[in-house]
Amino acid sequence: MTEVGRVTALEGSKAQVLIRRNAMCGECGACQIGKENMTMNATALNKAGARRGDQVLVEVPSITGINALLISYGIPLLFFLCGIALGWLIAPKVGIIFTVVTYFVIYFLEKRDVFKAKFDPVIVEVLSDEDVKALTNE
Image 1 (cartoon, rainbow, N blue to C red):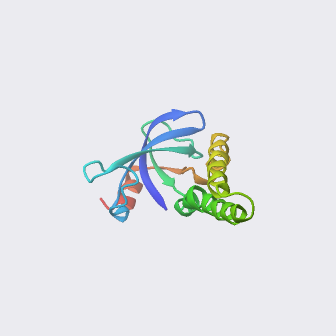
Image 2: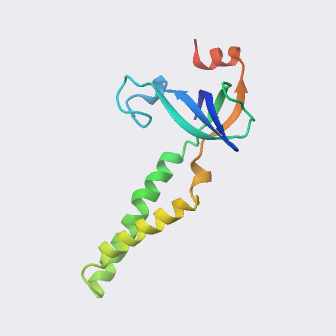
Image 3: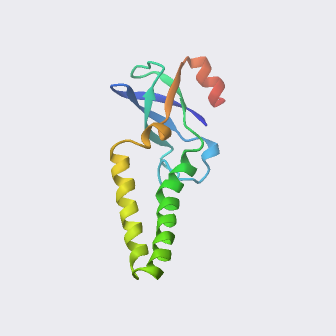
């Protein structure tokens, strides 16, 4: 998925981008709760060399949501079920212990940015005013 945004700040190889929510977002609410705030701030890898104030095309990996759900819920659920199976054989609370341990492992992997590169939006192009108009249908 691609979005148009404006660079508001630079932070090394990354940029803060203000992205306006479009009609395809519907009632998702991932960027903000409610309809009154139609923008979101995103940190994006600045591969296009954009500068502050530039309008840019930001590419957001479309598989991000599914992968995030699998990491957040799927892996702990799998370990919970394994813990329950082992719990019947060994001890009653092993399923809960496995789940808690899994969340700590995911937390520490996230702190080391193991998942970060796969989920970060990327600035792929600095846009001219004409490009922005064409992409946003204004």
